[in-house]
Length: 376
Image: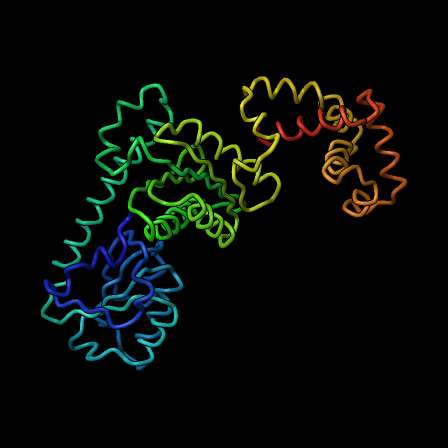
């Protein structure tokens, strides 16, 4: 797990005279790294979740410190530490009020404290925690990829507090629609997930696997876990998520279910789903991927080939027709065409597929569209 500011700063008041003077509500922020900054433009190189130290050397006008805090918050810093001395004698009230307002933790250290000493110690804690987190994540990934050999990583997982006799909650978070910002989005999702789960338990691991952010957790009730994951997805642009549960640490199936449910959730432009609520999709998830491909080809290839050769949109028309309970009116409204046009397309679709689109045909084709979502 990543360190929170509260964890990183524990004991620093006694050792270094470091005091929290504002922004207390943000002390559960995650800390990625520690930086020493003096330049007004330098926050631009921040990646987010950094704790910033400054002496205020460039504090040449009355609003400098407030502008500096605003820039740090804009670029995603998790906190600010001011070295009180010749450049900043006291922190202005407007700076304190701003940090309280945006939950940006604001600390002070006395001039006698050497910044290099406190930042060195903090960076050491961050690196040590990151190594431990990676080690646990590697064990979880091994358990997912090697379900018949999970005993090989049992000791590592037990040392991290996980138990084979407890239910395990698993979530897959898919990040979409954010070209060029995937790494930043993955980090934000990871840290937000950890921040939320820390309220319940420290027995969790969050990592990236197969283009998904994966959350594995024990010691939290299923409904609490689902609510936190749902809120994470709903509060994040370009993110959707799904959850699954398994008894003990048999993770391979649980991850596969959460991953496939997240794929379906993304294809339907939804934000969150539970595997338990996926209905007939569960049958598709249990099938082999090659079998699903064969089934899709058998059901839909004739229609796809017609679309490609003639520039028609029969596949999309059929999908909308099935998803809207065979309502011609609904399809007409969604595609901005007349009802007669939709009726004509449905007639041609029946001819191309050689069927009447009775209940049996509709079920078969709905399954094919569902299989495509899993294969995407």
